[in-house]
Amino acid sequence: MTQQIKSIADYHKAYQDSVTDPESFWAKQAESFTWKQKWDRVLEWNFEEPRVKWFEGGKLNITENCIDRHLADKADQVAILWEPNDPNQPNRSLTYQQLHDEVCKTANALKAHGVEKGDRVCFYMPMVPELAIGVLACARIGAVHSVVFAGFSASALADRIKDAACKMVICSDYNSRGPKFIPVKKVVDDALAMGCDSVETVLVHRNSNEPLDWNPAIDRWWHEEVDHQAAVCPAATMDAEDMLFILYTSGSTGKPKGVVHTCGGYMVFAEYSFRNVFQYETGDIYWCTADIGWITGHSYIVYGPLLAGATTLMFEGVPTYPDASRFWQVCQKHGVAQFYTAPTAIRALMAFGDQFVDSFDLDTLKVIGSVGEPINLEAWNWYNEKVGRKRVPIIDTWWQTETGGMMITPLPGITDTKPTYASYPLPGVQLELVDNEGRVIEGNDVEGLLCITFPWPSMLRTTYGDHERCRQTYFSTFPGKYFTGDGARRDEEGRYRIIGRVDDVINVSGHRMGTAEVENAINQHENVVESAVVGYPHDIKGQGIYAYVITQHPVADQDAFIREIKAVVTQVIGPIAKPDVIQVVSGLPKTRSGKIMRRILRKVASGDSSNLGDTSTLLNPEIVDELLKGAKP
Ligand code: PRX
Image (cartoon, rainbow, N blue to C red):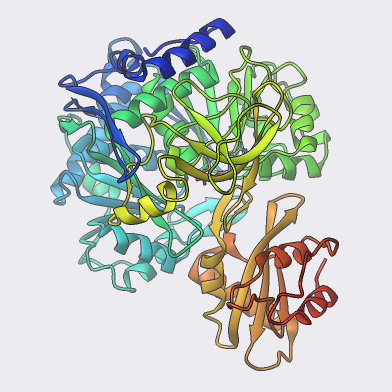
């Protein structure tokens, strides 16, 4: 077990130790795991290339730490508890022993299909236990998983399959999500038709009895390939710095990039952060409502909880099905102790009214968490009063796909909480605020750009296939530091509050999106000459997507045009990227050098026409009036 922080004195000491002697600090945490061979060196790093290696020379397999080492005393404890979309369907559960057996069988099936150490395997699956099993099966044999959120379109999926040259795709036939029935494999078929030549096998998990188009050359049923396999599979010996997974995420430029995480450091930090931030105790039922298609699901549905020997609840459905009490009904039914969700869900449920939460018994809750976007005061208060009943601490956890694990968060019952503040850095996390020129902002009660100045074990190592892009994106803005892309405030007592992205990334319902990506999609409509996308404040989603569009020909039917634009974006990226507002304009405000003045676009989109700043230097100042007149509420 890694160190347990139980008091504020423990926290201060751990933080201090992690800064004065990071190598000893993390070596001590790492010693509690099963290593096939101990590391030679705890840390080697520079942020110039960047080059970061934790526990180099160490050999391990993360699944031995997630599963095998718990078999001695937890073989019959539930590892994964599954709650289906339809509350009238039975739960499924897998004990640690059963999880072991299923992971081994699946790993053997992967091997039988030629998947080898280092090969990439893409997952496009709903939230069924087989997704977690499949991911662990990859890790068992040293294959690299790349999970793609099953709400992405065929074209977005194809981009990701091609970028990582995946050998296998694992999917479901269909998916029930809320009231919807979604043809999942059809999306994979469409993606493969876009030329994913590397794919040799599509392994299909049966989730329904509906008929399915079948390509006998590459399609294989999960149950036919997996069920007869042996329930024993030796765990591949991995170097600490071997790749564990790739997860695609959006940035301000270009296509989504594949963030690469490696085995050793990720393992240590996922367990350490899970155990301390949730204050998990044996027997607790822990529930994170995220999807495994995002980093939160990787670190805090699968790896963190299983490494800690916890019972992790996995939910197939949505918060509003069959009605807006579903979360609380599930908490009551299973006696959930730690509950972790996103502000967008809190805001949506808040809007349905208190009657959906008030009647439920939530006495088992010990910790309630928030992640993915800034939580506004109203949502924080509602969460605190209605869900936490003013008794349960809220942990507002700030982190990113790139950080692999939580970076800034209160420790429940140990550090204080302050509404809308993610509060204090975890041990090992060294933060700095800088101004636009990179000058360090010292002291408290200040605001600046959030940087991390020292490596932490679960940080990204590269962006798949393009190390220079990793350097450029994260390490070049402020040389010698990792730049998060977020702005933050540090209060009088040193707590951090995340203000939001300062780059061209927007956060819509906790989904991270590059404005350039959405623009590229919109531009594929044949009547679009140019577009510009910005975020604007949205009551439920946090940020909504506002698109300004210049057309080649006048638009006769506005409603039809808007529908078409939404359809194009849905096709290119997925429904999560559909603009909320589309304004047809004759031009965009540009500087003399041709750069779009996004500041003005953001102001107009947020309905704020004050302080537009100096517009006289624009190439086309007259356009501002047109934008304001046509602005949509
Ligand atoms: O802007 C921050 C916001 O989400 C971004 C990271 O998104 P992603 O890589 O998709 O990971 C989300 C889940 C870890 C950050 O740059 N963000 C995340 N958590 C918070 C947050 N903003 C404010 N408060 C948070 N607790």
